[in-house]
Length: 433
Ligand code: SF4
Ligand code: SF4
Image 1 (cartoon, helix red, strand yellow):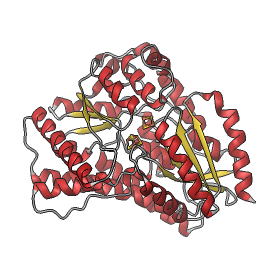
Image 2 (cartoon, protein in one colour; image 1 turned 45 degrees about the vertical axis):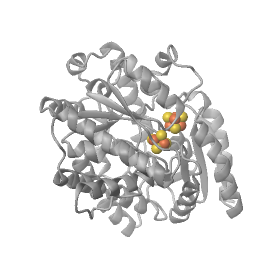
Image 3 (spheres, helix red, strand yellow; image 1 turned 90 degrees about the horizontal axis):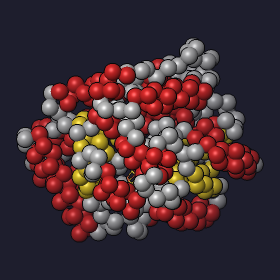
């Protein structure tokens, strides 16, 4: 059954955008393009779960309804913090009564703006993010009070210096190794982050407030874990594209409402599994995607896979399991203990910026087995050296275990879609045999 949406539209809020100092004329065109892409990518899917209606609504209100909620929070003097990395501890922002918004850019639109300032040969995520700000075409970017960047990669950490001229940008130093002294460094960074947020709000974060925030985000991560485990059922009750969309929305939606809606969807998926309803034909080849994050609206690879006879059953990525596989231990007696537990949870993130990073390889093999996938597609954004190089070790590990493996590198432009499709189709044929 196809969704009964004749013409999908991302809603227009020109007055609100004007008040945020945006380039309204240009953004209006981007809004229309996003609506058209969403319609053709998402709403043509057969047999979607009904609970996806909420996520359709979120996309339709992505530049208005959620922005209005964020502006309300600002009016109440609650801090609105923009981030680009899953290392920034959102629990601390929530504990301060604030709103945390993931700002990673996943669109080609503002890349040419960024390339007037930044070198062309850096990661498209960095260019897209910076371009959104300097072209004034992202209401989230315009709405945040300040930004927290990090030092995960060179392109990012040097871009923050430039971004600071546009919007106050603070930086957390992420360790690059996982020794005890690195954990100590990260703990100090977490404490500094908390102190900065307290300074801005002129209010100390209490034990109870941080405890509550930890439970809120643990519940959000648990709901995403539940969704992932349901996808592991063969046949999967939901498409990879829909699951990716939900993972992307998790970075800007209100967390309590989001968790409730994901759990409602999971209840429906439980029922679909019981009744033998799958999202795609049972012959679809199960593919696990691993690698760099896919920020909204980067649906390119999932779209290619799922229109080439495959179904994506897992994302080993920061917009994927790396964001939610670990929870914070909730058993603490005082603030120091709680910050230590928080630090320990974040140190489990296996981003390729760490060396060595063998935990990630073990995690990939585990998720491959759990997800009943038949092959791994490693995806790296162009010029992301750490993920590109780490793909070599992942390929070795896959070869040893006889796991079909394909590594691709891409950006946000549509130019390589034909070439990628040819490679993905050949990979799916190879996996089928
Ligand atoms: S891939 Fe690394 S740098 Fe990017 S969001 Fe994840 S942890 Fe942060
Ligand atoms: S994908 Fe790689 S290069 Fe791009 S921002 Fe993340 S770590 Fe940096």
